[in-house]
Image (cartoon, rainbow over all chains, first blue to last red; front, side):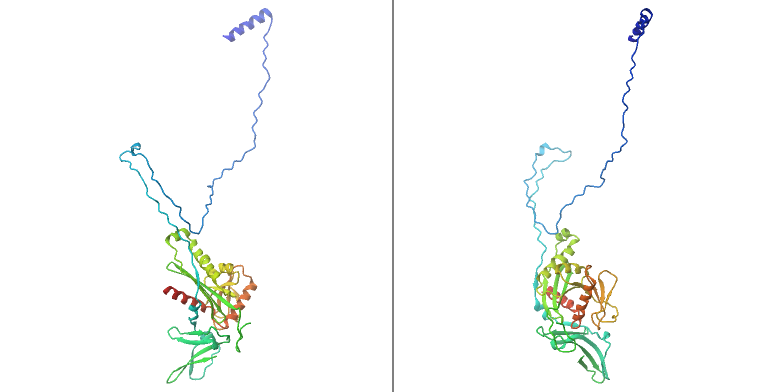
Length: 193
Length: 191
């Protein structure tokens, strides 16, 4: 209605008063919206958060724990089909794990009574001195002849067991041949080289 | 002074070899060290009390248990207790060479026999291509020995140690003390 009334007023104003309504259209243009083309890079870590928990190889001592029971009124808790009972755990036993430890002990006498064992090295010997009618069975070395207190041939193993005098000052090494004499007796003979 | 071959007798002072052996049998770990002079005569013998880790300790220590027991607990106890410091430390387990060197701050090596034919000359050293592993012809009456050194061992140090082995092999069997250590550990276990 407002628009029709305005139109009638404009009509009569133009015809009788010679006036024309001037309208102001205005030339205000809204400022264009500006968007930045700059991209913002968002970094989102996809890995899980690393957490380093200190650990030790050593044993630990237990922490003393106790409880006074978890109390609640059974009538306040309702569960379908079964009766709620109060759970009261007993004392938690804690134990201390002892450290792994060992002690080094000295016992030189234990090894001093043990003999040194020599295997035959005849297969490596290039020089094999022997007389007619005898066969070399074995060669044992290196041995310190002057330091030997006792020696025994282990016939089962074919090794020579030797006991040295720990107080000996001799260091002159030599070898020991074992010969078998061929003939009636076939007796054995030891000979230093 | 050094031993002479074929005449008289010369006392070798300060020249000794230290042998280390650590065994595990049926969950029981024990170790021993034997220091001998160049004739194999004992100068020092130490052994550790047996260690039997419990089931809980096995769980707690996991895969580190074996290394911890051998390289830290037993080896450290033995090295710390030995009073006669040897010229060379010799072990029969390749894994012990590096910790042996770091703990003794001295020369250490792993020694084992080989089935190779003897090399040309006594004292010859041959690099096997592996890092720190060599064949050493210590004497003329045995097969060359397989020797492994810690990785950081220099070539000149290898030659020097090979020289010590050659010198000792003139008057003793280099691998023989391991047999005595084993016998001593067996006798201790039987007690």
